[in-house]
Image 1 (cartoon, chains in turn orange, purple):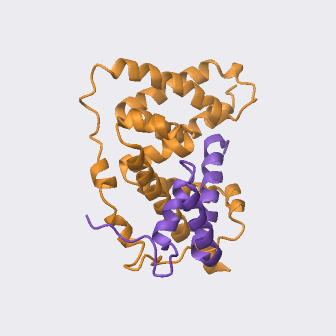
Image 2 (tube, one colour; image 1 turned 90 degrees about the vertical axis):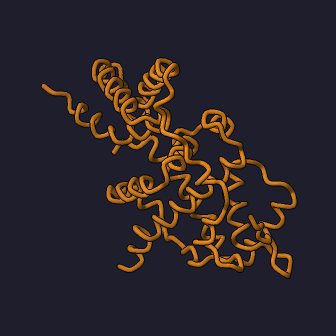
Length: 194
Length: 70
């Protein structure tokens, strides 16, 4: 009989690809890492005792695959996507879209009522992921590393080869984009219905 | 590039700067002046208070996203 957790494991694939992509910056390598991780996970499924969440367990397996691939890829870094940090952090003109010339919000952030109840809704997470996808590539990666993989800013700066202040600007921008996206596509809509 | 002023004529922070500090506070400890300015601004600005709550929500959401089993 098929273990129902096989399908469950597969359902975490998009998250794992996102994770791998934030670490490897290469779609093909990321797919490879996830593929290997899922295979290992299937083989050692009986070792999963449910002490952590399935996603956390899968991520820990993936982390090893990622490190392994990073080691192998280190001699060949030429295919890495160029980092577009200059465009993303070089100046703060992008803030003009959000703040008027007097420094005030163009569109006031709303009060989200009881926002955490959204966590129980599957559609919220779809919205959340599509908002993550709308972040610029480098911004999305840095945000993922900081907020989801939980890396320290210092580590991220080193990996990305950017200054701490660049890193802060990128994170700030990502947070502003995400909150605006969620407000427009989730909390704003919800407010309309009420 | 032209630097924008961070204070208005009353010496209060602009939302643009206040929101930057709210985000920055998640990366490093704010200086005494930054904290004081920010606190003062939050007292009078519901928009930045909303933004602050939304940042807290984002933190909770990413936490949940990391460990989600659904």
